[in-house]
Image (cartoon, rainbow, N blue to C red; front, side):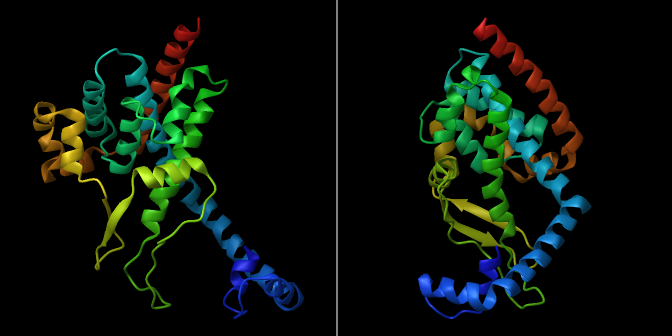
Length: 259
């Protein structure tokens, strides 16, 4: 963290000489800057940021959890399971999350395009299945947070912000990025809202996953009326209730499978 602050101070290539110059001339100053930054960060966590992050992770875990419930509790086709998941997102979660839907479809159709879906495929055999689900939800939340960090409104430094590249050695994160690759991101000039546009054309992808007949029955979900209905019904407490109930249901299913 401290070295990041020094990047703008040392105008030299990032090599061994850069490191020597940093440690000799700038390390103490950079660490002081990092301490001030982290102090403010932890103050924000205590003031409610931490709870807001956990609420969002709850939402993502609820979706992954219901996906596994749907998958394990029924022998119906993957298309019917996908239809049930979309209805759940609209009627109960009151949130339509496209990136997460792409990931959950990989689970339901057992396509194995991501390490996350492979990991959750054997969830019932894990020693701590709910910890596994929570960790997967945190991975999903990392990319959602990146979207939310995008800002088209100039702040007091007269700058806009967008993360165009991410360096990671986490295979789960890499797979999610590749599976839900963006073609573009639309920014609203009058607010900080950002709208990801995915490489896969949504209507074609949904038609392939659901079939025309099922998709026609869900058209209202993707129209403005559907968005307005979800917006009015959205509730954090409701998400927590769903999460608790589904954890109990999944625990019963796992116990039955393993008995």
